[in-house]
Image: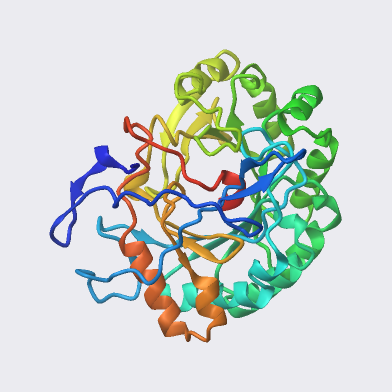
Length: 396
């Protein structure tokens, strides 16, 4: 069993809330989008983990939940930040995110359509109190109808900022069209500006395309352009060079501690680079002064560089976790609702949409799912087990 045992606490609305019930053992699903599929040759069968839980949950219970329209959980947190994954496909194969062969393709009929995404985003903003929307993947640029999705959401909720997390491969060709459709800003994944190191980490030699995409986003007004870098042992020495590049290009850089969401299951707490190690490396070249968090729900702690105003952010998801202020709710590309990045408790909104459920019914499912959000990710627990889905299958 896995759960946030160290985070057990009394809920503000009465009762004690500990870890969830033990999840059932995954089952083999042959030829479907289940957890595993048989592969192999010469009559041999090998199970391949495809990163999608086999067990899906129905309607969540609302016992003890106050009558409020917002996405409240048992620990008093309110989810206002919606992450929408729109594809499992990606143009890179980053070692901390995807297997070398990529994730198995989700059948097209199982993906949320552009109209379904627009409907769910509209409902979340209008009825559930969501105030930020970010599109993720996989790689969102792999969807040919991305501009249609952005334009539809912008037309429906014009006052809500629409952001996107992307690796920027090919972004130079679409940045202006996306901005015109209503995209507000982008977060771009870039872990190193060393070409050889980039190729090793992503298994693709596409650094120049990424750098061109960053510049195109800036020129198209998708500001501020934020660069996200996952802290890796093999790129740590180049972290000051990446920071200097971002300063020169007018980008905001945020380093992120690597989390146990890799498809190859090689993450180990003893091997990860911590925020403290990064600060020591950056401090050898830059003078850094702590600023903290401007928003308690913001994941990044900021450090002023020199006399300012430039700063660098550090998201210490493991060593300085911020679960107690988490305000996120997530939709996967195949329409599953997740209350936490590390929880395999999912609720099937795609089925609800396609079976004729009205907005009120979908809102009830959504509120119930978030009511049961865990206290924390539980990475420090002795019995911690990573989620079935990898980062690429969940969405960042």
